[in-house]
Length: 376
Image 1 (cartoon, rainbow, N blue to C red):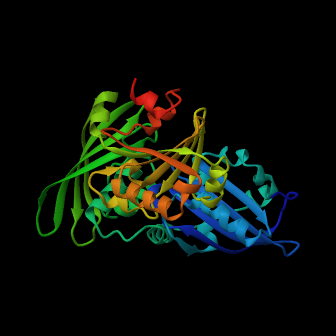
Image 2 (cartoon, rainbow, N blue to C red; image 1 turned 180 degrees about the vertical axis):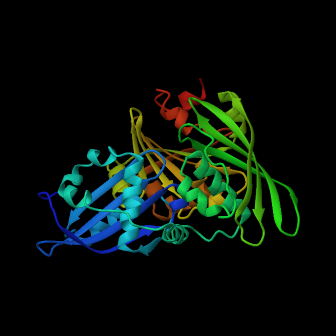
Image 3 (tube, helix red, strand yellow; image 1 turned 90 degrees about the horizontal axis):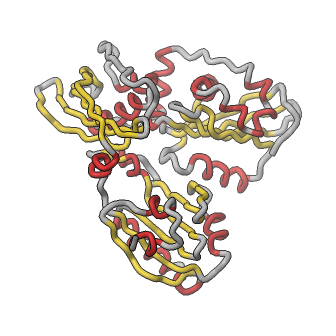
């Protein structure tokens, strides 16, 4: 919903998701323009690579329009909204902008308030930033949680967020990589502990320049403050795709159905605005994320641990539901039964279990059906 360029908009309120340690934050801010109209802005902010990678500028939106948009932009972040100040809002947006200063130009709504945007300034002090980042983080009550978040921020070269996990009296070397990369898996091993410190060995598997790298660290965690007081990068190993796949081996559970209702996908998409939609030559994929980021408190941590399930509508008319957690698939199957979708829109074909995740490979394979793909 666009308007002519607005030079003056008055800040009213803002809230942000408490997901800063994931490297992404959703923000909803409300303003008033010179005509006393309500302006609502919705952001998806990335602090590793993409900067302001989601931006919507709405003028007096309807409640339903706004709720659907917020779900679409922030529904996959796994966090809760907390109120933030005007200064915190400017910091979050401008610090994401500094990651990629070309990112705003890709959004059609940006021209509606570009004059106001370029007048914003970030005046937050170090202590105010620390307080804000703790507000935008979950309860850091677990060593596993802290170490997994630390490795995500280090690999993503997001050092401002990483520093809130480190004791302020400890000067740690943080810059180990020339570019931001993605943490795929993190394994933590308890080595020793005394009354004050717990010592861990950490293996971080990252997606690295079309290959994979295993980075090894020694980490000390204070028992009293639950902050990092020792961090040493010990060695790294380059892994082949086969070796990396062995490290990531997890079973995938899949329901296969035939769609009998041509409008089923349209209703499915409209009813689930929070799901991430990806379009492929073979069909459309919808990704449902977990409602929170509790997977970060797991050892080993897996990047795809935040995915609850994936739903694929193939051009051949098949509807596939896949999950790495069998219990999730059982719940989805029960939901399909309770909503009578098997009778009204779907014809159940079978359930599959594979030793390794195969859905993405099938989608990109060019095969018409998953059965053709699996029989190759």
